[in-house]
Image: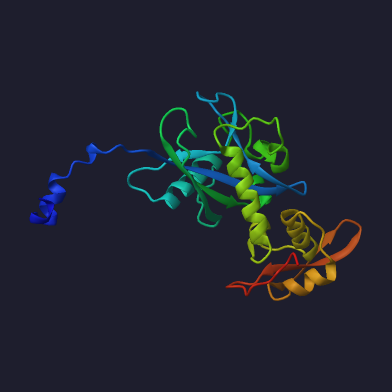
Amino acid sequence: MNQDLSEEEFLRRYRSESYEKPSVAVDLLIFTIKNEKLCIYMTKRQAHPFWGGLCLPGVFVRMDETLEEAAKRCFVEKTGFPDGSEIYFEQLYTWSGIHRDPRMRIISVSYIALVPLEQLQQLDKVQPEGMKLEEQLFVVEELLEKGVEVAFDHKDMIEYGKERIKNKAEYSKIAFAFLPETFTLPQLQKTYEILLDKSLYKANFRKKVQDMVEETGEMVLSGAHRPSKLYRAVQGEMTECRIGK
């Protein structure tokens, strides 16, 4: 009986092949804002199933890496970024539908990665489809429309990710992840409006974010308007602030 064995002996005799093992994958939702719309990076399937269909970038988790390490590896491999350490990552949800993948039993853990458009525009890696990464950005709302085919259950993932970002924009600094290091207050407000999907009153918004930002002492020209002050995010934890209320 097992209780008569030492742990070392038990582990030596243990036969893991006696149990079925599902594969574990990571699917990555890379969000950015382009032309004042929330967008997401998609690839085209280069093999069956769903050959030629739009899908999220993903990788199988290796035996010697954690889920987060797999997510960051996926980000680096698919985008060409030299390092994903400065990117906002967050685990989204575990998708375990029995028939979600027609090949075999695959459990997928989805992650979101939020990237300023300016960083994506600096990339020059050509993707397998022969396009630059920025050319593979799709408007989230358009992808979620009926009739748009997306491989596997990735449309559900995108919907879930969009709602997660919207909800967190109400009380956190998540909107700053879409902005460059320095920005104007109108840029910040517009980012929040895109994520929350509603307009915000300028005076109320600036009052709510006043403790979240600090002036850089620099100015930037904005078209025919007078120069605007540049700000940066205040480092550290933020007390709850209901931006959308």
